[in-house]
Amino acid sequence: MSELGSEELEEEGENDIGEYEGDRNEAGERHGHGKARLPNGDTYEGTYEFGKRHGQGIYKFKNGARYIGEYVKNKKHGQGTFIYPDGSRFEGEWVDNQRHGHGVYYYINNDTYTGEWFAHQRHGQGTYFYAETGSKYVGTWVNGQQEGAAELIHLNHRYQGKFLNKNPVGPGKYVFDIGCEQHGEYRLTDMEREEEEEEEMLAAVIPKWKAIKITELALWTPTLREEPPRMEEAVQEEAPGVGEPVEDVQTLMDVSEEDTDLMRPGDEDADAIQEDRWDEFRYDMALGNVSFEEEETRQSDGPE
Image 1: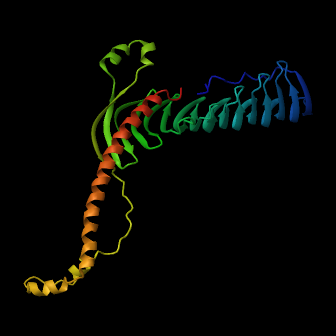
Image 2 (image 1 turned 90 degrees about the vertical axis):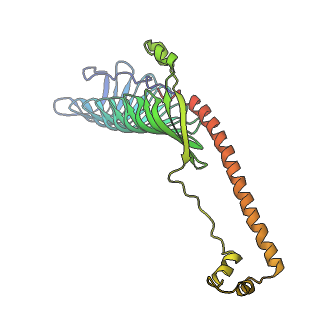
Image 3 (image 1 turned 90 degrees about the horizontal axis):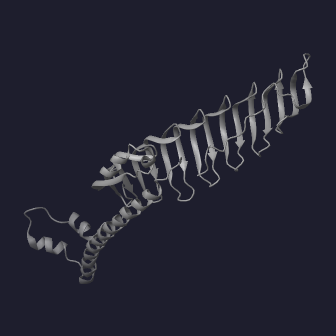
């Protein structure tokens, strides 16, 4: 993941004169539209107000970064796009030269974060998309880290629970697309607990998933194809009531031998298909358990 540390250089202050070409007010201050080349090699083209960058403008840094957006009294404030030297970029809201509010960060590895920012860091509700795996973290952030209630969505299953320092903790559940849920919790082993005191080892802690039970998917309702009523049901509707002679019932059930042969295999096939589906369900569910453990291990290196 591209580091957020690839920040822009500080812009020249208001007292750095440099070269200027543009509008001025009666006091001789830069006021209106103008172009400036600052002593450190940066350039700015946009609007000024009373000698300060104010309004829409483009600031280009000598290191290759540039900001295109709004200024208020020499500071990035409002809507703006910042393109960093490594090619990553941020599009969103700024307050007092910092990412603050809602915005989207595009990383050089094609990952994206869309959500809330506070004082230059991911903070609040947001979604982080992992381009390499197609997985998504949808939930809360605190000071740049995944923390709080969230959902980690993979290609064929998802995990719902709580996170702390970008790792899942406590009770949660895996929801599989095959139509079942695995409930359990993430725990730290005794060895990992002893290492928590050392900061370097704490960063390497990997929570262990302990499964408790598997249940049906709560809101999963399969779509069934409507089938015409079976011949047995149609005959049953015409069957006589209780107490009538058996001979009359036999007369109503008098169907051709060929039709009878067609009905019986259908019932046997239905039972066989149902049994095959349960075997397939158990097999796929076992594969799902293996795949999510591998995926979860790979995703333990979440955004920094």
